[in-house]
Image: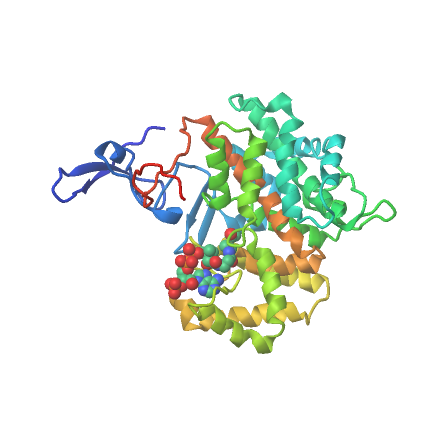
Length: 429
Ligand code: ACO
């Protein structure tokens, strides 16, 4: 869609003519200054970490970090968490509107029809060491899907893109559970299409060929919420990675594998694993003060994992829902005196009152509570980021699809070069 300028910014550079730059208004949030023509004037913009750069136009998700608002296609995340479910949100992210009853049923049935993975894919798993991190396995096997689904790799064909979206959403839980089963040396458990999405994931994680696993409705609901709360978060690092990879025309499975790799980092999706590891390291409520001091020390790289966010400078709205779900799960499981939870609560209380955290507007983020819920459900720490990746898949695909459906350019940032100027080759003696 062509943008029309609502205002003009004037950039005056010493000794040069003033450059006029159009300003476009979004439906919500900040306006943007279009700097695309600056190159022809001999300048690039400089914005490490893209803190002030809008790299695309999007209609999928809106965040107001100051007010703690997150909307998917206009719907607030807390309303979606209360009234909707993960698969309905997947439909909404992909299609722009909520499904009616028939559309919703067809979507769920379609996803169920794609839950199995090609039997040959098992061989890929067997190539990994048993102690491989499940995220390493996921980067490999999701990328490998492109070797199995040649029938739907034409990125310019909307029907191919639709089938790929369904395949990815359906197969991610299967691959995630397989990566876990492989790491503990148990046989893979096939999906069961009579179960709901989250229920089926827990079944594939915890059933064995000799024993069925009865999925508690509270835990299935909590799992569904975890997927739902992670489904999309506009142009975060992994989504931007998917867009950048997709902008080259790479196939969607390769792009999502790139997104998984970016998500793995501890500053992004790896933080939920980091929260539990940090709480383990702290060891008890009596040590919290010492760790708060470490976090505040500018010479110490230690950070309170699960605190702070690039965009939210207020309570992450997902963290509020996650906190409620956490209490539901612990009550269902009869966990009243969990030392990890006790530490998490004490840490949260101190950090929310401490001047260092208050002045920097560092609040608990979604990872702070999701790790505790997952641990209570019995999911091992190494799987936390895999679960994040599974939940984030519809967001990645929706953004990739949005980009591919319209006019787009290959993503190619520029740089401020600080290296050697041209010099003649001379061998060192
Ligand atoms: N603990 C202690 N201090 C922190 C923390 C933290 N968790 N987060 C930020 N700060 C401090 C920084 O040291 C800095 O202090 P200074 O101004 O005195 O130098 C200030 O707060 C601003 O921090 P930045 O790193 O500039 O903030 P940025 O927006 O770049 O980083 C990030 C955001 C990466 C999330 C950061 O807050 C962090 O590392 N948090 C811990 C990891 C985490 O929980 N990541 C999950 C993110 S959410 C997600 O991906 C779902």
